[in-house]
View 1 (cartoon, rainbow, N blue to C red):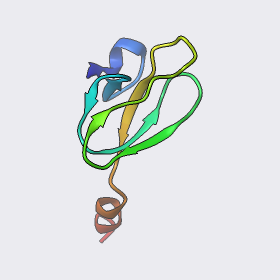
View 2 (cartoon, helix red, strand yellow):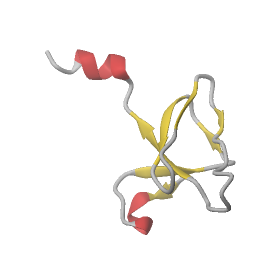
View 3 (cartoon, rainbow, N blue to C red):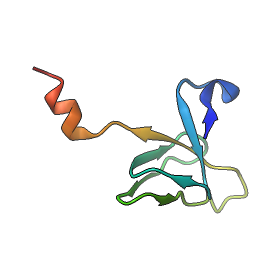
Length: 68
């Protein structure tokens, strides 16, 4: 995990190849990509020679519940 402010973004970012908690992630650097890691695990590399950074996406169920 790194502080997104280090690269001009807000929030916590996760680095490809390192362990991340269960959830949905969106790559925020380079080519867009979304991945889901239901049980936690390593985020996939970029395969383009760049370090891929991912942001954790909100759970859609919790978003639906917050509208009330």
